[in-house]
Length: 212
Image 1: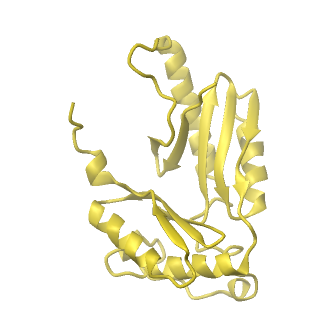
Image 2: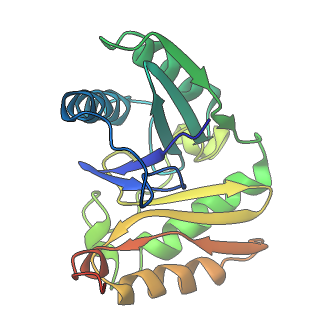
């Protein structure tokens, strides 16, 4: 069984794994295809609205028949359970397979999240992506005692920072390849980060016509 998993940023859907139609494959009837697209947008909308979903998480979903598959990473356990509950309540969904991985509760990873956040969103060239007046927020009392993972900066952050056992993955969409490169360089300069995987999408490259 193949499932095409999608990651969402803002209001756009991006294919993240194989599973789409290949040359010679039979395309489903237009009515079924429209129904799947409509269902995908409903799932996307509900997940984006989750208050637990923030810049330290990255969710993906796939649809097979009337079953929705959830994958990705959650920095807090509540996101995994809430995502499943909300998706189960969407009309047309009969079953939810929840494969979201809850990231380890690690003080070291928490520190890396904070440092990468400051390094990226505090950089002059990337400050426009920060919804908090262009500068990182000062640590709140909760953040001082419990860490940034339990009290992430509010607002929509187009660059998501996923940290797992010292390994950093950047997800999301930026305006151009220059910003994509800067974000990777900033993350690579953070002490304690063992590796950086840059999955950021440059919108300027996506909008170019593809060569045939």
